[in-house]
Image (cartoon, helix red, strand yellow):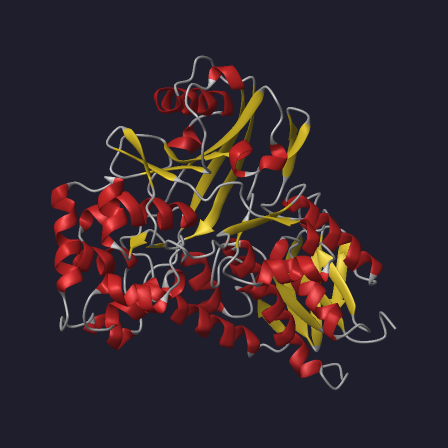
Length: 476
């Protein structure tokens, strides 16, 4: 019977917090679960808008298929039949003033096959030399420092063996865009464990990567598998269905209920904008800065770690053009922008080509992104100026004949934590410290991944953590 068991408060109604609530009720149907969200809606970064007469995701538009957590949650909610893959596996990188198709055999932007990379013309002949040397390596020592510490920086690990052009033109545009930051000090253990495993082995890095990770594009004769998936109708359908399922299971979902303080006297007391909430256990599924503020009176070292994590801001602009105003075929999912280039944009998604269910005769949708750690230029532009700058940069690439007929700008301020070398070590220490407070756990993008599957996994893991001491039904 709902409400007869322990009471658990989930602070944060993004996908991590909602997943935590779902896991809590799946494991303890008798629990009383309260989800406290500061915003007026649930879903966090997942949001949509009506553009050109159809609902379009204006936050994340997909999740990686190689991680199972998001697809599994969709199936649990009855959305398995609504999962769709992109309409094309083709993607490009903008380098040297031209679009170059990404070659087969990439693992998160790193090449594992030399032939397709040569044919792509993404690298110069000089840039290919380190890959030829790496391909011939048999007994070269692995990265001993990374092996000793269990971590290393993504960029240097790749550059040392495959050369700087691979980093600038392939690795950084992809991994850097995902995490909105440079790969120069990005933790391989946190964001690219396959690279770390391959780098510490002796011999060719590309060959080792091919052994430890599945390339993102199939070889000849192999059955293609999607890299990304979404829900037909948009990811807000996942959020809406999850919210409805939680309410049907007895959860109390409270938007507009920011938690101002958290204290422990036998049980937990959460002070919100609408009064106090008592709970036997708490899941904190909020940003690092909010979690730091709530934890500071309880455990200053953990609060210090969370407050010290650098974060970056990103702005997306979804643009609708008349089909006749785009002068090149949008025959893929979009393009990434190689560094170094004096451009604001970091990537462009061709939405109506990537997701055929969004296609409407007579117009096309594209979405651009800007903003990274160390590059805050987009924050100084208002929405109109950002759209104008994006259109200016897109014009020569897409042969635009006119500006967009409609635009929607979405901003995510300080929303992308930067996982620097050693990040997972600090996360594990923070989780142990928080667990020591009794009935408290962390969830969200601050921990082990910024993507939707990683956030879902963190929420479900946090739910299991706080339920452990309550397994016998006793209240603390």
